[in-house]
Image 1: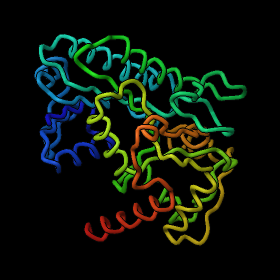
Image 2: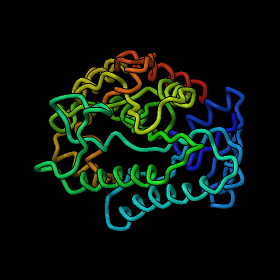
Image 3: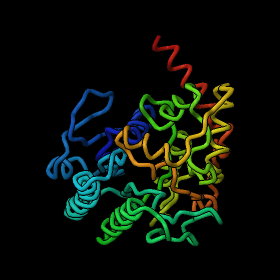
Image 4: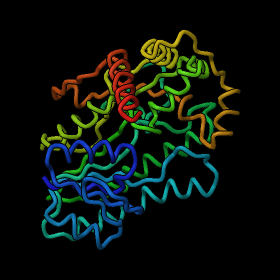
Amino acid sequence: MRIVIPGGSGQVGQILARHFHAQNHDVIVLSRSVKPAPWSVLRWNAATAGDVLERADVCINLIGRSVNCRYDEANRREIYDSRILSTRLLNQVVGSLRHPPLVWLNASTATIYRHAFDRDMDEATGEMGGGEPGAPETWNFSIRVARDWESEFFNTQMPRTRKVALRSALTLSPDRDGIFSVLSSLVRYGLGGPMGAGSQYVSWIHEEDFVRAVEWLIAHEEINGAVNLASPYPLPNRDFMRILREAWGAPIGLPAPAWLLEIGTFLMRTESELVLKSRRVVPGRMRDAGFKFRFAGWRDAAEDLVHRWRQIKSGAS
């Protein structure tokens, strides 16, 4: 297949590019920063996108400024515009092609659902977030971005291109500077205890299941619309961190109360929402259609990721 990945220079894009390149597919990443890679990397603009998407089999749009920042006015504008405007532009480009991609997968986020402790959130019965009593204003901003992003994506009907919005949970891989690497650093330094109350749910997906899910969605022509990409078993933060400590063999993990997290995330120039919001998201549509996870439970996933992290580290040294 010819697979075009706008915005594919980040962690998730590199996971996908690496996987599909290893499968001998023709992978083209569109990025604002062009760096050497085993696959093709071209500078992102409308003209380039039109040229490479003509007769492409798959478009996987991941363009969006990282949310790992403080939500000041400038960053909010960039987070919002980078997603909405790029998706709008791609709608125009793809709609103008004589031979558009057969399927377009567009990034979205599991953050679109409400702060949930009481029950799982799937695509059919999950409740959209926004305006929950006591929720910080930054949480409402994230939900507005997610909802407007999907609305922009689906606004333009394309009879020759199937559209799927990827409501992804935390995608965990042993890559340097990824989410798993950050959490593992906390654990190895004895700081891997419960975060906040520890009762908030963590939705996650192992990178192997993430790429398998993307492949599966490409192959299943009957599926369109929004799809949750998450393990079927989200778990409370305290259990998530405990299992990660056990995988690392870390004997202690100091807790981080909410007030301390607010100070820490301020100093790290990020937002506490990333760990304090309860995301209890499950893959209803994929489960009902028969998708089988290789790492459905967090213990097996954590042990595999720690093992692979150690392999990468020993190979680098």
